[in-house]
Image 1 (cartoon, rainbow, N blue to C red):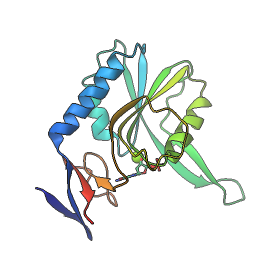
Image 2 (image 1 turned 180 degrees about the vertical axis):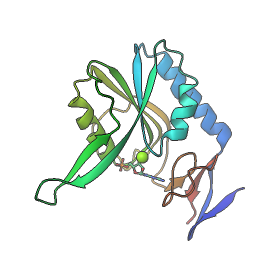
Image 3 (image 1 turned 90 degrees about the vertical axis):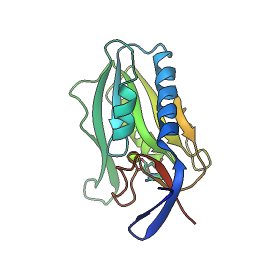
Image 4 (image 1 turned 60 degrees about the vertical axis):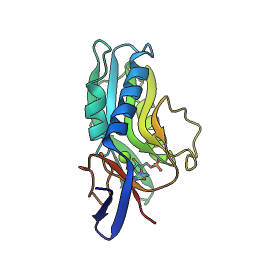
Length: 178
Ligand code: 5GP
Ligand code: MG
C-alpha cells in the first residue's frame, strides 16, 4: 500500500514498518546505554501508544516502570486563559528519573507544558524520547535526549499518529501527499 486515503486527504508511504522498528531499536539502545537508573517511562497518550509498546519491550534497564499521561487544556478560573493539566500522573513521582515518551515533537509547545507540569512534581530528572522530531518547526531550547528520526515539516500519520483520529492503526508512517 503506497498510498492511503483518510477522510478527504491522500497520504503516501514515508517510513515503512521495517525502518520504524530499526528507529525504535536504536532509541532503546541509546536509553539502555545512558546510565539512567530505575526509570519511570511516561508515555504521552494517545499518539505514543505504539511507540511506547514497542520500545518498552526493548528496554533492559532493571526496575523500569511505565505510566501513561494525557495533557488536557481547559479554561482556567474566571478568565478564558488556557491552563494545562496532566491527567494520569501517579500519586507520587517525586524523586523519580522520568523518561517522557512522545510520538512526535513539532513546535515543542506540548513538550514544554509537559515538562513544566512534571517539574512541579519534584522529579529527580527528566529525559525526552521521541519517535519523530521536526527540527525546522521546533521553537524551544529544551534538549531532546533520544530521537528516532528527524523529518521535514510534513504532516504524517500512522503508527499511533492520527489525522482527525484516523490512521493510528497503520503499521507504516505516511505523509500528506501534495
Ligand atoms: P507541538 O506542541 O510540538 O507543536 O506538537 C505536538 C503535537 O502535535 C504532537 O503530539 C501531535 O499530536 C501533533 N502533531 C505535530 N505534528 C504532527 C504530524 O505531522 N502528524 C500528526 N498526526 N500529529 C502531529
Ligand atoms: Mg501527541
